[in-house]
Length: 433
Image (cartoon, rainbow, N blue to C red; front, side, top):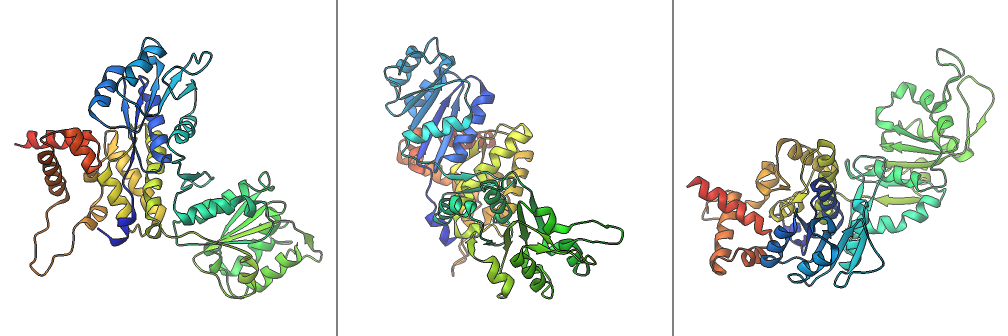
């Protein structure tokens, strides 16, 4: 496995959602898996199966709907007989206080995010930092770099100073720019995006300043269209060098003049820019008053898993699939991969997995070969043969079962995987014999 992947911590929270409305349970589980740091989420659709799971498996918290029992008191008594940790009860009849034995009562109907916030309070604030934006990639992260950005976001959004967002393609630069605008006093005003890499060099002046004459007479250009709001210059390093001083002069003077027109027009806009690098010229210095950097996923591997969970929730909802998370092997592989395309490549993979597979968990053997390949060490001097990942998993599982005398729950706890993974792998082996 890649050296940097050792810093990724395996899941240490296991949450059981007990709910007979499977559609709601899936949405809740997906939200919890996406937002809780280092968490695995399981679903039980009735009280009996929940009791069996709690008797043989270890869970960190239980979130149970009153609908799976005759009444809330009976539900709490049955679950407390087998589980001593945080117990949250969902009910449509909240009553006049906390049920004896329950840690929290949550009124239904409620949103999955309400459950996330409630459960986080009982897990020591284990929420991942998640910020939504108009960009489909969003911004998700618990790494120090992302937390620093989220912490600075309120001050940056309220400022009028230019911002330069630096990062490789797919790191979320457009999402962050949109988020800054949406959190700013200009949020209700225009947000005009200019992809500088797509501009025709011969027509770049017309694109920014407009036309006073000709077939597009009266066209005001990007500067006028963004006035009152925000102008976002994406791939700003692609602007022609000869045009950059002219654009800088307009931004400094807060005026624009259509070619062929005598009068100048006042403009009032905030400028955000993004790119992989910035020219060390006047425009570059002017735009870099507030610099932000979005690191590549290989530099914040814990965020790869959080992003994958976030994309899985989005894609499963859109495709009408039942996926709620990844198994531990899959998450370790995702954290260890370098993701050359960053969030773009990760999201594309998750979309393929959701469309081409069935089930509730994405397992390691569903991942593409490029992601699985990292687990294969380079052959040593003795040319030691490399066994496929599936065989390595089976070998580890059999070793753990032997060590614990066949006790699946203890073997799963030692391997830090769900017992259901062992059941599934053993059923595959039996069927193959």
